Image 1 (cartoon, helix red, strand yellow):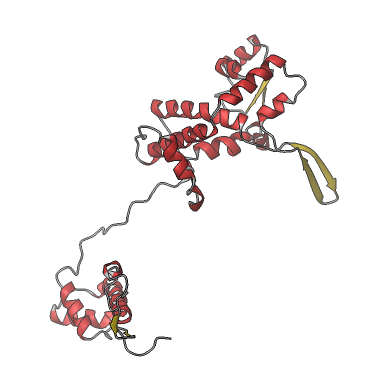
Image 2 (cartoon, helix red, strand yellow):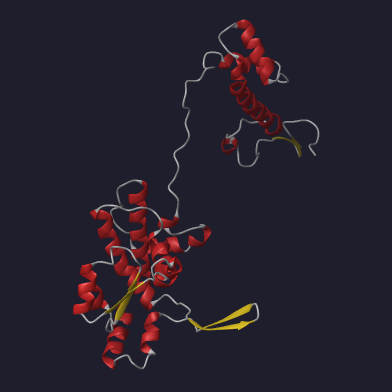
Length: 304
C-alpha cells in the first residue's frame, strides 16, 4: 500500500476489495484508519459484486499473466518486474472506453461510451489535477519508448511461460532489432502472448511391448503378396502358423498396421514415391519422366 501510494500521481482516498482474508484483516484495517483511507468491501453473500471490485482483473491482469499457477520467490520477482512495465504501458499507451450512460427502451438497452483515451489523458483533462503533476506526467510520457515497453512485457511473459511449462525462466530479453523483426510477422500467429499458449503436450508413446514385433515382417510380406487380404485374414493365417501364441484380441493391433500399409501402397501407386520423400526429387521433373515433349506419368490412365 505504501509503494502504491508513492507511485500514484494523486491521493489515495479509498480502496475496494473482495472478502478475501488477504484484505479483510486487522493489518489492512489499521493501515487505512491511520492513513485516512476509506476501506470498502464486497457485500457478504453477493458474489456478483466481484465483477465490479475486480473489473480490471480480466482485461489487464489475466490477459498479461495468463491462468497458469506460479509459485516461489522467483516467480514473485518476475511478476513484480513485469508489473513495472505493464502499469506504464496501460496507463500511458493503452486506450480504453468508459461507460457514460445507459438508456433503456423497453427490452432494448443502449449504452453510451466516451471517446477512447488513455488514463494519462483522462487525468490531464481533469480540472482537479494539479499543474505540477500534469507537467511531470508529460515529461515522463516523452521519455518512454513504446517498443521497449512492449519488448519487456513480452520477455516477462515468456519467462512466466517458461516457469509454468519447464520450471526455469529464460535468461534475457531479445534486443530491439530482433523484437521489431518479430513484430513484422506477428500477425501470422494466432496468439503472440506466451502466457496465453497452452503447455505443449508430451507425445503419446507406446506403453506396452509390441506383441507383433517378431512377425511384423511376415505380415508385411503376406500383405505385399496379397494386398486385398483383410487384417482378420492375416491374423487367422498367423494363428494357423503359430497356434496359441497370438489371441483373437490382436485384431485391433493388426488392422491399424494394415491400414497404414494400404496408405503407403496407394501413395506409391499414385505418385511413384514413398511418402515423405518428395523433397528428394529433382525440382524440374517433379518425379515425372520426360520423353521428348510428352510427359510420362508413373501411373497409367487418367485419374478423375
